[in-house]
Every structure is written in C-alpha cells, then in structure tokens.
Length: 293
Image (cartoon, rainbow, N blue to C red; front, side, top):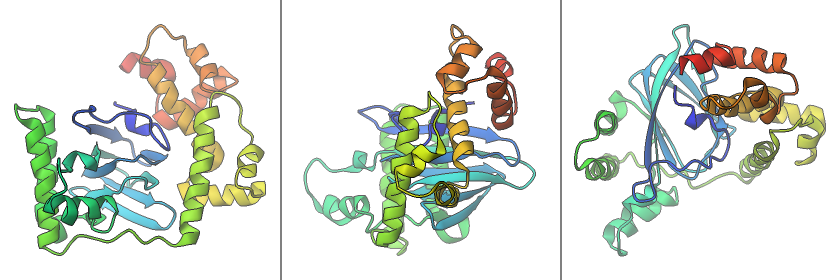
C-alpha cells in the first residue's frame, strides 16, 4: 500500500513532476482506521471514496462525511484529517495537483476570470461533490481516475482538459464557492497548529515532551492537549506515534535497514513499544509489513 500521503502536516513530497504536477494515489484501510493523518500541502486535492465512508475534518470547524461514490475537494493549505466510519473499512483515491498547471502563458480572460479567483479561493469547487448535486463534476473525476490507471498518449492533455471542464461546469451551474473569508480567530488557531506540526516534523526522531509543544503556542499542557485533540482528532502522543510509524513504513521498504535501527531512527526508544504501536496503527508487525511488500 502506498503510504506517501500519510506524511503528516506540510508535505515535502513532490506530486507528479515539475512539468506535470499531478499525482494520484490509491488506498485501502480496515474498519476504524485513522486513514489520513492531519496534514496540509500547498496543492489542491480531490478525494474520491470508492468503498465505505470517511469522515473528514477540515481545519478546526468543518466536518464532512464522504461516502462511496462521492468526492471531497480540499483547497491548498487546508489542514485535513480523515477517519474510516462503519464496519467495512474503506478504499479511496486521492488526486493532488498544483492548480497553477492550468495558468495561461499570458494574462487572458481565463486567467483573470477563473484561474486567479480560484487560486485566491474566491471561486473554488464545492467541498462535497455528489451525483445528486454535481453529477458533471463527479463524472470528470471518475474519468481522470480511469485515465490514470493506464495513462494513454495525451494523458496530460486529457487531465488538464477535465480540470478546465470542471471549472466550466461549476461556473455554469452556479456551484463555484467563495472560501476566501476566514475568521481571524480560526486563522490564528490554524497557524498555531501548523507551528506545532512543523516542530514535530523536524524533531520526531527524538523524544518530544508535551511541555515542549505546549510552550510553542503557548498554553498549559492540559489546554494544549484539548486544543490539539479538537483540531486533529488525535491526542499529541497518538499523532506523533502515527507520524513516526508512517516514516518507519517508508524505511521498511529498504531491506538494508534493520527493524531495530528503524525504531530508533524514527524516535522510538524501545523496540517492543515500536512493534506494539506499529501493529496498532498498521494492523501488522513491522516484519509482517516488510514481508507483505
């Protein structure tokens, strides 16, 4: 299973290539799994649920259930996290892309009327996209997924064409949404969370005390733990463990790394604790995960 999108918070991964910044990923998770750790990226994302149901939290106030056959649009820089709902697990596809790929070579009517307002979030896609409300948009998403499974010649033109047509359909049907306004208090909470997440990213390889994280904001430890849980759906310890396990999963793909060394490299002081946490999050031990690769 590809774990690239599970690199929490601001991702350093390049999606697609410099010349075609469009990446697509498929996932499958067991019931009750924390399928998307809290993170953000500058690119836009289209999340399409294939099976099951996922509850998304966007920033700290918006909760959106996404069911099989529905899609979710996430604007660049939005912090988002997702949990599997129900007893059947879920599978989904995520398309992550730089909307600047649609920019014109010169400042023309398209650039002025659609691209710039979209990048400023004054005219963006609806958050939840369903067959009942946005059938045309959903069909373009399905077509892009189908194209990406075995990209034909001219694939890049087809993907850009579908995104342009999505803009057309959303504008023509009055479904473009203004999400440019943000309450100052909400923005402050989001920025404080990002500060904590970046700190975890830079220091996950060593023990991190809750007091360290609380001092960044600053808050008392109790206030911080409540704040973090409300923003991410996880406790700080669960979040750090989840992030470390995702990093470990990437290292396990490289057979030259010993499991005991990997545990230390990602910040676990004891191999037994690492195995226990890994099993809880990934539903298998590190050795089983490496074997299944």
